[in-house]
Length: 291
Image (tube, rainbow, N blue to C red; front, side, top):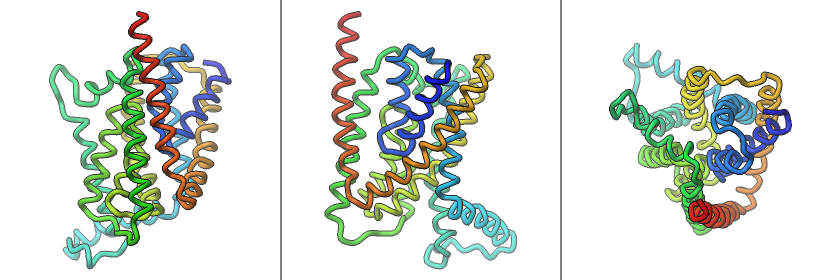
């Protein structure tokens, strides 16, 4: 892995992790067409999540700190038996913290054992590690369809709702599906689900990115475990360059998405994913025919 490829991977990670076009899908395509060893690319992808977290902390440090602080307040209230389960009596920060917890619960399905020392995560990992890109093509098109539905719903929505437990559950399952299939965007699916259920674009974006923190940390820990087990040797300097690139590009991507949301251009991501998915599906089918 040379510095040029490390920078390219950092750019791909930084852009596609935050723009709703699927980082896992684009990483899979880059690996497929560049000839980079899939295991090496997987190791780099795991490490580049550090850059992803840095970008989120830079852009949303204040609400993340408030949520972290709220956790200790909740523990204190529970120990003193002052905790109330009535959402109407909660502060906005406490309500949001509990919404995040609810949204994270579906991800636990990935840890369900399925026998032979494997869990659900190991089963779905086959879609990312196989030599075919047909699954990625189909998933890109599904992402595009979901993005367009969310965009058109928002354009017709006259009154936005606050995040509710039902919305939090649905967003959590959208995140779960995105974690299973490369080509389904995590940010795209969670933002679009929130938009379809009546949330405002600004709140949907902020909720999606902050929700990304525990998901990325959990995914990173699992991938780090796989890194050590694979015993892959990765040069430190290209890795550092990739992480820095991912963080810088990630910050710019978040700012760009916020502008795009305000200008109501979100639907164009849907058109992009539909077009890319169609092309990738055709190429995948041709590759199977040629082989």
